[in-house]
Image 1 (cartoon, rainbow, N blue to C red):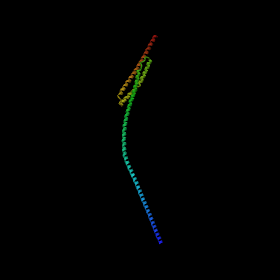
Image 2 (cartoon, rainbow, N blue to C red):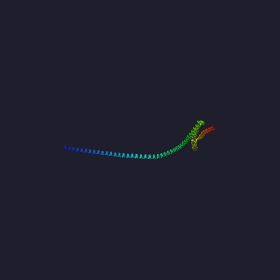
Image 3 (cartoon, one colour):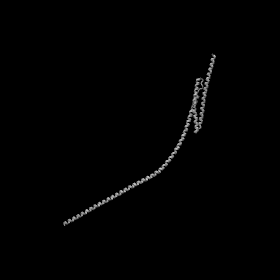
Image 4 (tube, helix red, strand yellow):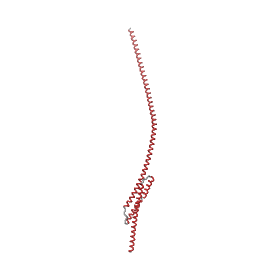
Length: 247
């Protein structure tokens, strides 16, 4: 009985051990299955996620590419439109600048012509003032001259000085003619002021008057010198006759 009991116990023990081992292997296999399933699920999720990310990246790249293309097309259209407007603006600005430049050139030419006319008038008046001053100087010289001297030497000196003044005054004649030519040119090419004629007329009369007075002064001195010579000659003749009578 004891042996039977032991056998039964051993058999039960072996049976239990087999059940345990089977159960353990089953649990282990189940765990392996679960792990494998989870691993496959995780792998699938990873692959799905990777594909999803790749697809998302491709989408984003495609979207950016399309956006860039759209921007390029918009920019090109804008540049074409803006370039056309810009060209029109440049052309209008160039035309306006040319018009303003032509106006400026015309104004400048008119101004230069006016300045040239004023320069001619200034040159005319400068010459006229110089000649008028020369005439006044000769006139003042005449006013301070003494009557013809009674002695031969002072009289001779007066005559020489008068002739020098006449020579100096006569040297103004080319400039007087130049003054008349300038007035004639202003009359022909420009609208010369009316008072120019009056100024030239007064100056010409003044110039001729002083010249006449100088020449009259010269004749007076020559006459005095001749009279002095005649007097000396008469005195010499008288002295000679008296000397002959005395002899």
